[in-house]
Length: 134
Image 1 (cartoon, helix red, strand yellow):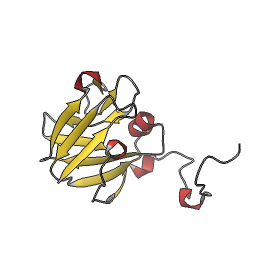
Image 2 (tube, helix red, strand yellow; image 1 turned 120 degrees about the vertical axis):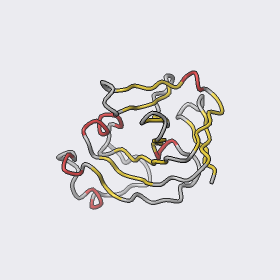
Image 3 (cartoon, rainbow, N blue to C red; image 1 turned 90 degrees about the vertical axis):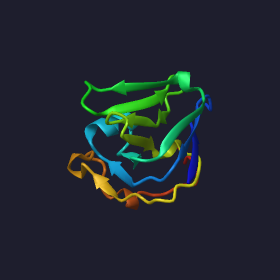
């Protein structure tokens, strides 16, 4: 399988060849801070290969105290990008930066005990096709 992806401003593009082995929604405090949302949505692969098509020099990786928590992002627009962790053994891809259809569904919520206090019954919140009047 081949997937393509990009950052918000389009300066960085990439391709991933291979399969994702897992897809998790992480509610840990670090992932919530990374995304500014209720959880991160990350794809994982130990076999897929990442190839930068453009803008690799604009990608930066932040490692938090070298404890295994890393976030790669575009230095121009701040969009989350793939990164390679565990000494090159694990490709971590934020699902939102993938432009292709993803053929794996999330397999679970992880670190759910750490979820935000406002992250309850979100499926019951009204849905709008666009920004409602504020």
